[in-house]
Image 1 (cartoon, rainbow, N blue to C red):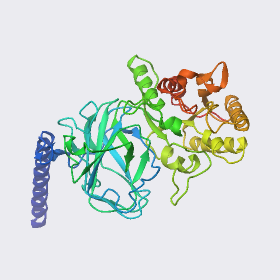
Image 2: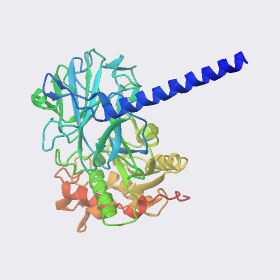
Image 3: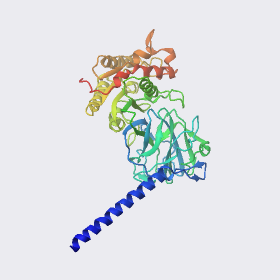
Image 4: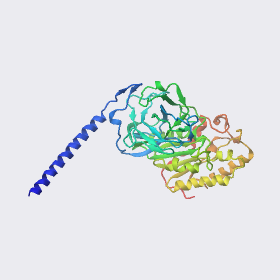
Length: 448
């Protein structure tokens, strides 16, 4: 009898503890949800208490922006960005109710420690300023500090923030110690910022005025979670996908325009799926050949496919525009069958993961310093195989869309940036319109 009374008392105490814990949790959650960001020195409001640890995502993760790590930044081989705040500006393709970031130390030669990281919506217009009320602290496993060994990357905890589609987001990091070369993506066509000292939570861009650069540093991905987007489209390519001749700070690369088309079609009532569009273009990239160094700079399409396509969340379709640099940079005459073999290998890897592949024909380049008739012959052979349906599930015929009808070995003049290899802004728009939205529907890949 005494033992039964003891069990009853223990049960009552346990129930009381559980009830009190639930009440305390509810009170803290409500308080944090309504917390107002506190002020801090150096330019504005800092992250609120309620944003230190984000809840688990309630939706599906979708890639809204990405940039492949390319190489170590010149001039950073010793100190990296020690003692400086790095503010990256990125443009979203789809929106969500939570966000997370991926940071990379792929080309660092030592441990890279971040002690502060933030995420905010840009204030609007050009500049490094953040919109009031949007500054959020980024954590990693619940901590504001994270250390990445050389060659490693890390994805943050979810951050509670309503991120609109077609908007600019600021991702800012601070590292107090030297780490070796800064992992970066040059030719961003986007102004990014540096500040001396720890200014990650500054709303004002004042500290960032003096130091600007056309490259993204450390940041390789921004994902969002929500119920709007159905998946991710990855654009895997070279400088033609990277958009190296597009207008700076205008988001006129062809993947940007493709994202606009998808949103507009969905808004107009089309049943095409709303996908995030992630740009994994690298200037000078090839299907078959890596750059120099260990780890290799500018890794080939074959070697980076796992990281840049299969490693992205919710990928449904990949659009591949690679091969022109395999032709241009081969000291001899490139073998078209080797290029086609490499492209087919990428397709096989995508199919093994249920991913559909849209492939682009190679655009003309007569007038460029690398042009000769032999290289043109290789381009024509590769394009013939692509058009015959012997490589990809679907084809985006960039060549037919942008070539001069009076001289098909060249760009149409108004589609040429002037270097006879890269398009103008108008040419990039035409590339995006050449991708059929119906080809981006979720479907089983074709049997090739």
